[in-house]
Length: 125
Image (cartoon, rainbow, N blue to C red; front, side):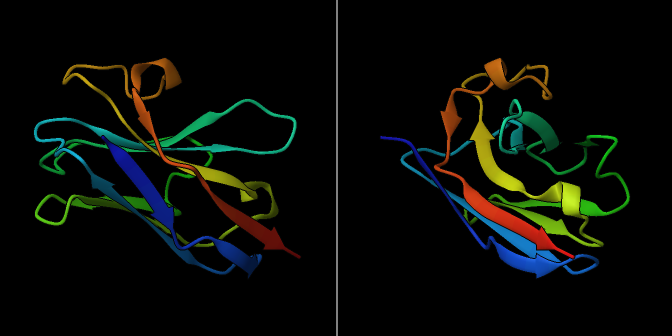
């Protein structure tokens, strides 16, 4: 059974930093992208970032470019999201996601077959 478990969320002041981590179990995702999404109250789930298996390709939503960094450690089957210069509008539940095929449109939620339970990030003023 595949499981993705996020950690690292919490309450932080605007301008601060948080590091989210996601650990996968049940299978490895060799050669697959991994992604982070978020969902704020009353809004649809939206793409945040994605990373290729090698780490050589990374993609970011415009809203987080230059502030967030995605990385992965394939030996540990983990993917991380370093979030700096946090803004109030970054408040959301953050989800780790993995697809079940190699070639995907990384920004689309429907491309991902596996999801974590989410971790809350709250940015205060």
